[in-house]
Image (cartoon, rainbow, N blue to C red; front, top):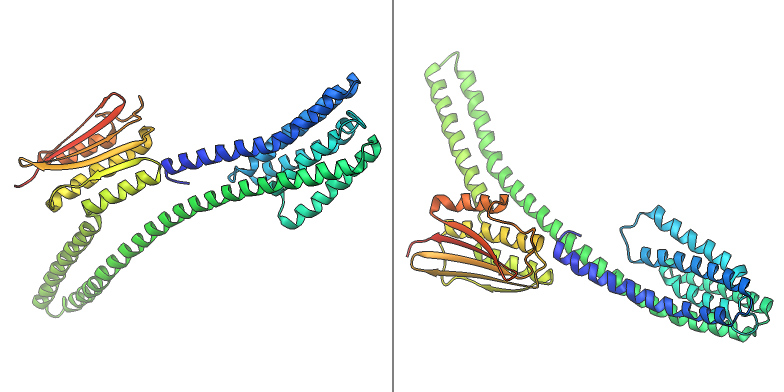
Length: 380
């Protein structure tokens, strides 16, 4: 999970899933409260409240773990174990509450069955549901409750709640897998680009270094017998080394050169993926390669600032060319007090980069909207 804006949307989806699960499972926990209200024995009421609260606390831990994929495995197992202990304890504490008048523990069993999709795969879910049904029937027999009530509540209601819980967790898992896929594609793209660059450098240097090694070896052999020819070979080695260095520099320059139009498209897509409405207005006509590369660097930093230093809902990127100047303006709402200023390292570095060409970078915040304005003189 790498992109902060995308992670923000994933956090929102997680919070929504967590709230939905809590409402779905919590609804079944309200009905044991009816049994507490109908119980005339104060001691049983107190014991029932203790058992119900222990179950609710353990259930909350398991629900939280279900939507927290980064939770360590040992902590997840401890929460599952706590739910098992709370369930066992609830039988003697909650089971006798409102005996014969209300299926108190059967509703607790329904909530437990509704949680099984968060705990097990489909096959264990069926076995665990059967086990809870057996316990519910046993509690009903112990308290004098009709067995059909226990089967209907724990089985029928519990399976319905489990189906809803499964759908909610399934959608959450799809979102997590999609986000992980995005991160994996980004890592793969970076790895492929590194491999391409490494391959290009290898192809360039492999031949040149081989020739240099052979020429140097020849010069070393000729030095004792033909100093003049050895000198010519050494001069050739020097020339070839200069050519190789020039070719490597050209390769690196080509690798680092970024197309401004592609950069605008890429930044716009990243912002939109992060939940920011982004409008991109490209310049009229092409810019000189040097100016385009400088503005692309400014745009990368501006896009990073939008994600890192704001709670932006919209962003506008606009490049205007007029009167021998090209002006790039990046505006976004949601500016925060800890946002970048003109003394920040990134912006200062951009200002230093544009300065030799007569360019400037200015920033200001007005009405909660952050403005970054970069100007650069360009030929007419």
